[in-house]
Length: 83
Image (cartoon, rainbow, N blue to C red; front, side, top):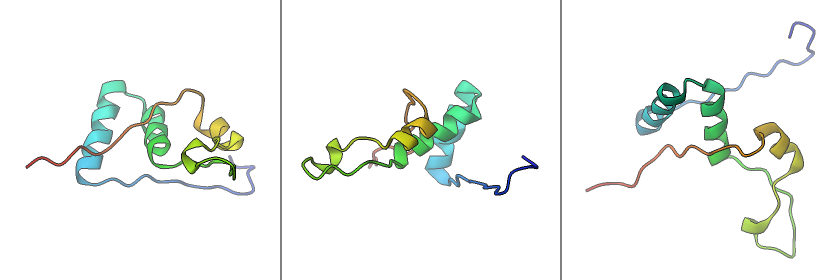
């Protein structure tokens, strides 16, 4: 790390219900990497444009797929509103 030209820092900031579900996942699996990448995988996606297809059918970008990892789960941090 000391030899790196550029050092990036990324944060995931969560409040209220979203923080609750993230902490619940952390306490269930005790794996911060899994929780962080599951959150990212739920809310961020980079795709390659394919003009002859609908956006939902566009292929996931290869570099993004490598970064996020194979068969990565997604962690939804919200629930349906209740009366």
